[in-house]
Length: 62
Image: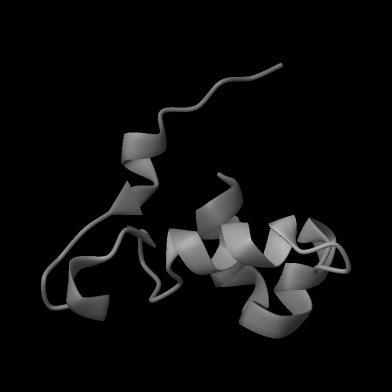
């Protein structure tokens, strides 16, 4: 399994979502995506691109 450095993908900036961690290049909060994936009937990762578009999903997936 390939490993990745999360610090290359997740950033914080006080000007974006009040400093919450987001996926680099997006306004998608890490917390929001984790909550979606954790819901019992939550969104499957492959379906995230339908909602947020490939750039947002690619940023979160690496």
